[in-house]
Figure 1 (tube, rainbow, N blue to C red):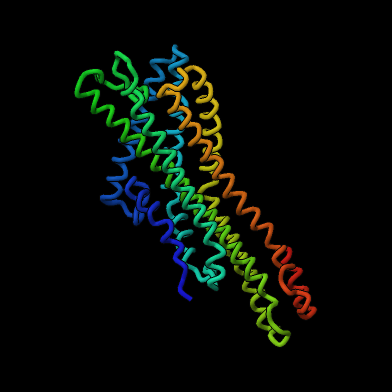
Figure 2 (tube, helix red, strand yellow):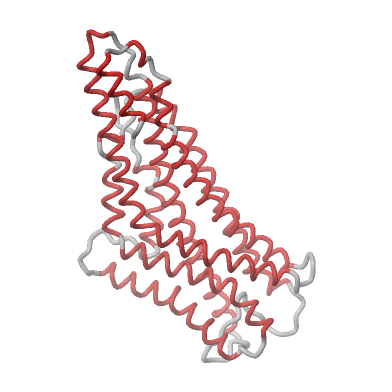
Length: 341
């Protein structure tokens, strides 16, 4: 049967991370290293620096500090994700190469259909996240323009070593901030979706493994050796799946920790900020869209993580769903062993 192309499903995310300067093709320094340094310095470090400096100057104004802090934390989180992507790029590439292994291939059309709903759900979630994230960005980008204010406002409070209220500095600075937040949002989306992909692919492996276990005993006793061989292959498949999980968690465990901490604080601050703005104003809607987007991110991490754990725990039930009672005694003992994996 034709190999299932797992990598084709994540090519888009890898391509976008490469555009962001976070996915080098090799570890050797070159033109891409220079490009990566420039983009990260300009769109992450520069954007964060100007906002942090501004916090120093407005430290006496609690309302302004609160208005800056919640999205500043999320931007800091994007910087953390970028750091761990670049630090663990070799681990990531090794995990992706693992997808090509024969162990991770569905063995029948039935197994292909078995994993399709999970993959489809993950891809739909990505589309929802894109709409919510860039919708939130659109609110942040336009609300200073549609608010009736005499002073020129930027999407984000920041300090710059020039008077940005004058034209064309205002327009240039405005566009710079919009590009920066779009860049940071793209990092958030693609890193998160890549982690979701690892969780989805792992849960698909448990679906395939469970189906293999269910069909172990669908043979006569004359095929005892074949059944025993298939049992050993299931054990090996399970070991490889656990090895894949172990390698993957080295990449995203710290990202997940930072994500939960920063997102929790940001949601709390933004909910407080929501009580201080004019109801149903453009800023009100931008805050609501921000809270929804961050909440969805946390929910999806929990959802896909729970899927992996649940499907792993359900492997033992797959043994009893097979016709294990018709096997020889020594194979029944092996089935008992499979129940414990």
